[in-house]
Length: 403
Image (cartoon, rainbow, N blue to C red; front, side):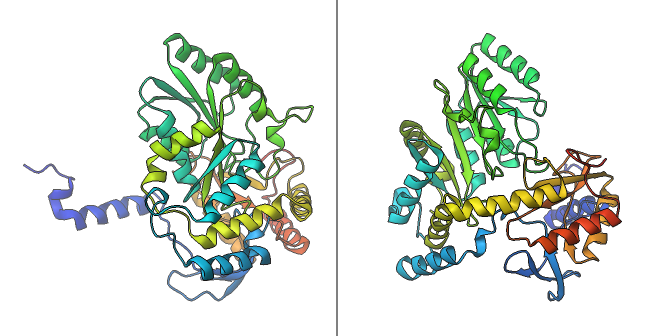
């Protein structure tokens, strides 16, 4: 007998329709917008299916340094496409690597100060690869409760046991590590350095100290860390180069570097193990020549004087909106989902695209506006945002978010 509510009860079409209705009834229905833009400003379709015709300024993108429009990256992508075509053809262990892949990996390793680096098609795939490779049975993965979904899914797919510590709570992490050590488990501590929805920074110094004490591997996801301040101790030393620390650094090419892809940086042997064990590397087509070339060009910009200037511009924007905040991600906590959607709509009516973030992306009762600033924003655009937030009583308080 078929159980009520099972897919066979009314066929798959009925089940799919029921699931869509449940999402809609919960007020969590989502659909992609049509936004025709090159940089922060573009045309938005306000009604689904409508051609974009409403001019808006986006404060939604993770293109923090505005490098997705950099002429060097565009030229490099065009040149790579003309030379190698639009796709890599297959996984690198099957078809081989383009010279671009290997050159970018060497440069990423130099950037992160590691022996080696390995490219993945996305940052999501990089986290899956790391945690499933280094998390076999007998390992305990201990993860911050607000880590990115890719970390959560990587931990779920790993065969390791998993525990979660309260967000940024070093004491709770210490308890988890002590318990795992007592039961004889090898441990991995995994954390974002800057968290994607709150824009706050991990207490990395304390985490490094705990990892050294318990001989735990540390996996850090640096996707949203533009400035690198969280990586340094008060004396300016790089915490991730602490002697005796086993660390893997996960990064993305799609945010600070304005392209697409992910990478893992670490020791040569750790990278070699990923090549041979990480299914999200082995069984997926390599990054396109265009994406790889664009990321390489933008990496050169980010590491030079122009990159420093863009970071200074971005920092000035942050200080204008929320002084002292550590990242370009500025949340305005509204609470109720409908209120957050209404606040987003009120900003859109003023020509500002600021998305409402709701459950399940964030916890119930913490729906918010997620403001993402970029060096590509002009002072006038940021001033317009500040004025609109002030008029709507949504301006973040100094060093905090509104509740």
